[in-house]
Length: 287
Image 1 (spheres, rainbow, N blue to C red):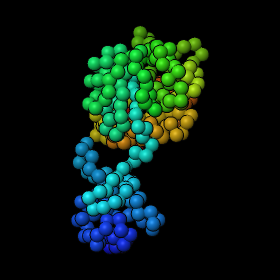
Image 2 (image 1 turned 30 degrees about the horizontal axis):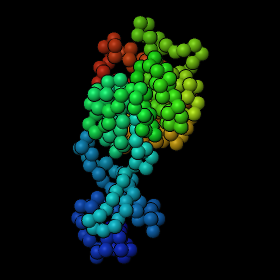
Image 3 (image 1 turned 120 degrees about the vertical axis):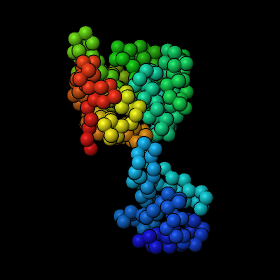
């Protein structure tokens, strides 16, 4: 199979060279085409790429433009990543999500009332001041306490139209540890959807402690974010930038499932506050 691959790449002029040995192809990050790959779709193949957080190689599906021996451009699993992600809030969750987005290859804007704090949220982000900055991102993460959402809607409602809005909130009354929602609301995410009818809402990150998002691992395995949305494309776009940073995702279904996720998130917070689980731990999804 390898010999066929080498002959095929050479014959079609992808490398403008005679067939190379196995070590050459390893050095240039491609091994052997998938057995189910169409004969003339040589751009789709499997490569082993090393991730700094794992000791063993990961097998990824990549698409490459093979132009010459010294010009091979490869992208792995990032087809859905939006070019820019805006994050409101530079606290623990905002900083952790900013780091994930940067690692995934996105351009990241962080908006906070303190622009210096926004700029320091993660290496490589652009900080901006709440109320004066314009939203740059196609995906907008509201990494704020739920009661602050109305301030964002009041200041940025028009700019949020047409955007994918990520809701990581857990609306909790910390006096009673009960869920605290506006009258008639089933979940924070559904409340947000009612307030922003021209936006697409994705529930995500509320079942993860910030430390496990920042580290990308929990109990020795990749951190898993649970997503809920009525829009499959928006859910895929959010999943893509999370997975592009080496974390995992699971699809919890439509946005109405945010009710379950918020109850799940509230219980995890209660266990953290009562010191029954560490803030570096929490619930772990096994895939």
